[in-house]
Length: 251
Image 1 (spheres, rainbow, N blue to C red):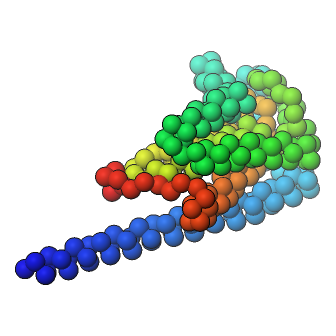
Image 2 (image 1 turned 60 degrees about the vertical axis):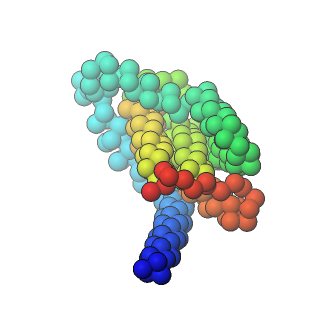
Image 3 (image 1 turned 180 degrees about the vertical axis):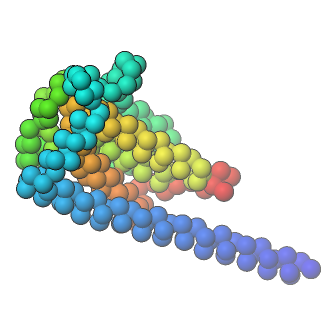
């Protein structure tokens, strides 16, 4: 009887190990797909923008979010416009710096010192990339409608969209690598995606970006986050960054 119980226990452990390896491999494939698809998508969008092929759809979508009788008035009641400003602030430099510092503080307090160092390099690196790309493309801002927020830089790709994707998705990807509970991994990723989408949509709603600018910012930011996840996973396997700690919440 004991022999059969031992065999069942060994079989259960082997199945759990295979299931765990399967989840990791699926996650890796998904990240590689996001990275590859994001790079391809950004290059395609950039080429279309340079050729001027996106202007018609950009103008149509931007005007669809405005009152036809008064282009200075975004569609919806006043509180929707105010929420748009609130959401766009979530992609501002000040907010993103605070979010990043908060995540770094969590990692440091949790004893994940090398993971914190990795995050301290990954997030600013992505934001720097966003700035360089905006300077390189130098696309003018929309001039069809009045801007509902202050702008200082070029339009393509959307800095708020890319920086929010870089910050929220990268931090979520890194935090999931040191968090064993699957439900918490899913929560972090869903929250990061939601925040990134809200920031990008608000930029078009406020008339400060063409829709394609936002889409390009999302693809570039998601690609950066996927790259960071892949690099961190590789470093964890080499013992250069702390790994997740298994626990009861990992079911």
